[in-house]
View 1 (cartoon, helix red, strand yellow):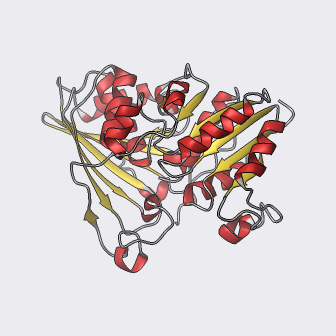
View 2 (tube, rainbow, N blue to C red; view 1 turned 30 degrees about the horizontal axis):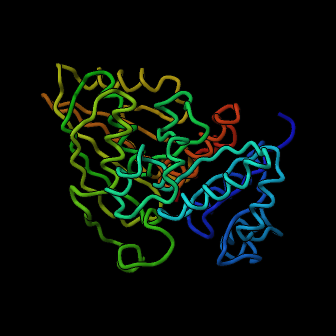
Length: 353
């Protein structure tokens, strides 16, 4: 593929949109065509993302009408949506509707929650408002790249960041019949997972040096994880999840504990994880406990496991903005355009974040 594929980013000045722009800047096959911000059209991208000024010295945010015009003029396009939940569906629907008469071959990877559920009722039950484009739901498949080789839909919905970590940890256990649940999950996330607008839960003076749980046993990613696990393994596990806010900016660390369905030791579980992810280039299984610093700002996830008696624990560390969002989305888009899934994503973690 000689000509670079135009890439369009929805999501304005949010952290995930910024991460998408960073990854596109270093991608050899995608080239940024437009980034949408209806509240800041015409403003430089570098005003919102100063760290990207060297990559986009002249680029400016586009309005929806400007982006739509560019999208319709492209013979093919990669559309990434990092727009907020409840907003993304309407934007994607409008842009796909405009592109269809122009016969533009558009592939969408949505990082919001808007296309993660198979029907509008399931979405509304979790997010407490009507879906913005229910007729589009059948055009999307929600899965991690590690758990589905190729979707049978034109577009993909990427699971949430916490959901990504939980699924990477629990799906191999379920697939190998090592447990059928219940799964007890504890996870810690960095402050960037809560968005860019400062609120008490993410404001640095309040979060620094602190650790606290929230939405205990009531987090909205639980139904999403159960649905994706069932699609990947045929098993819909009972899941008890307690998330925590950690005093760092990037990364997620998750521990999944369960009762073993049959006798196994630590080596056997590590072997099952390695076997399951043998062809997953971004998943590393190690006997050492995973650390957030080893994966932060990369598209890699590290897994480990431990067994004592009848209890198994699987640990997973990944970057919430990259592997759990923008990086996973680029990984999917690579596949949708028949590129090697590792294209533009193999940079290692910086290590001293």
